[in-house]
Length: 385
Image (cartoon, one colour):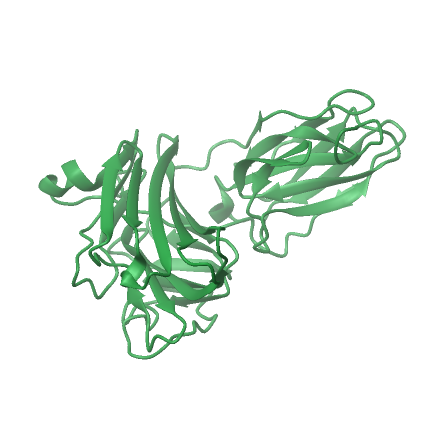
């Protein structure tokens, strides 16, 4: 039986909501109990935008105070926030907001689109996806540095604590049963400050490189920034993503929810089971069965669902803990076509309601017309107690 190390946290994230009624009607996106409100994007914007986000308004009406994107083209003396530069348009509808710059900062280099989307994941939990897409307007590559800033108050006005590393942070409120988790993919640098001063130096003069410092801390305020350094190719978009999750309420029972469609091999479609559910402080078990015997196999895992074709296969998970699009644990099936994996879950309630996604792949020469692998559907784990 394979063993997955528990030396790193299973995950992290953040969120918030509430503002004046006149603004709510125009600049708020909602899905059931989850709501996100964005402040005005103006021509004179020199700071991050005020926002509100929550999945549990009756108890915690606002856990995300500021959240915004900044940019610096190569050669610029300092970074600046995305603002209304005269090429900017926006729309808010249902669960989704879309902000578009047809020619970012009138440089003739890039267009940009920021989307926000909210999703309810339970009566007191939900996710905010914030996505930036950059598209090259030229025939040459365009280097650019992007920052995203957030100010979280999981239990305002009480203090928060935070753990994590790189692009994964969990903020735990000192009030009962409140967590905010932030996850950004493929970040180059990051910053966390247990107070709000200059937004991790984004508002200070000069070209910034984030210091990769600030975690863990206890009993303070949480502000953070992520940094991506990218070269945008001609004809191909660059996409940057942050996932912010608000989890409120008692720790429920562990769950395993299968989704997606597998690809048949020599014994039909391999099956992915969870004979032991993911509970805090215990060891969950994942089992791949109905597969080719004595064959190389691996479990792909990540922190979100996907539906990405790869030749004849379909990858159903994304965003692995080391920042890649997915990560995996390899092994071999036994003579019955079975492989099992044990996954220790840390004995800490801050991991309650954390979500982890799995899919199994098996080398199988009976699969033709593409890559010689059969694969399972996927399973979403929800950590409980």
